[in-house]
Length: 144
Image 1 (cartoon, rainbow, N blue to C red):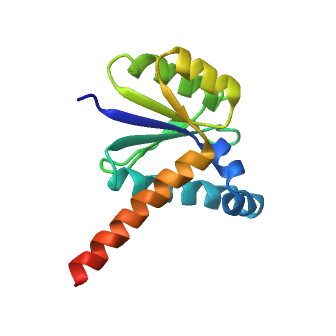
Image 2 (cartoon, one colour):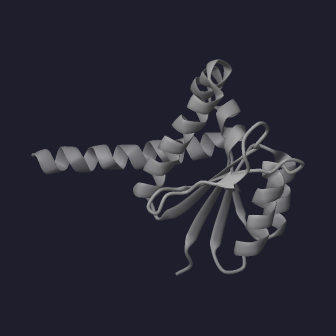
């Protein structure tokens, strides 16, 4: 069975989800951190390996993952998150089940051309909610 990889267009998700968009208006870093927290929960409660990619305007370019956490990437100056996502999709889609979460139609089309699956922000939010509900149900069952 192929490893499942989820590549997330960070800002596409932030601006699609009202609570994160509002938070972003007040504090960009807090909105990014909250998205990473939610995606970490998804990875912990699913069979996806998750990477989130942000446009790095004003941020030092990096790959900022922890050994058991999700991978967090920031684009370099003159580079976009979209180009990183497309490059990763092209690299990994041959040997892995890659899913790209974005609302950008051009990015979705390109990722699909490389053999990746795509989901929208709404679909990703549903996946996160299902993973959280599964954990809550397990905890309730264990308490009985």
